[in-house]
Image 1: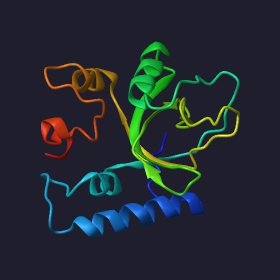
Image 2: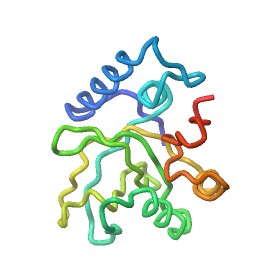
Image 3: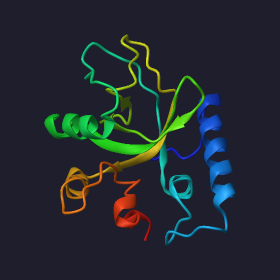
Length: 160
């Protein structure tokens, strides 16, 4: 699929504006290597994914475990789902830093933000797909981190 880096709706524009404001607040005070932080990394490297439209086949999981669930669902999908992390915009208008899955058509499959129904809570998604082998290394190792992007325990190695 083609990498989509430009917003196509108001929710994606709001997410982009929020990340630009976050990046501006950290410049030039912080440097974590090539990037000034998570917002800077995503603004330069991430892509937009279409917000989910729930189906009866989508996995549903308990909130609070998005990294574990996305990894597990992607690993068990036999290649039909890929693991992704980034910022997602909730109905509240607040961006969050979760993990989700992406299907082969680059559509989000979000096991957490389902609201208990077929209507998705996530309105916009900007992030990157990560290979499961890399995610496994981050999650296991001597210094375990639930997140590839927000791996503060190891000093944000993705940004170096």
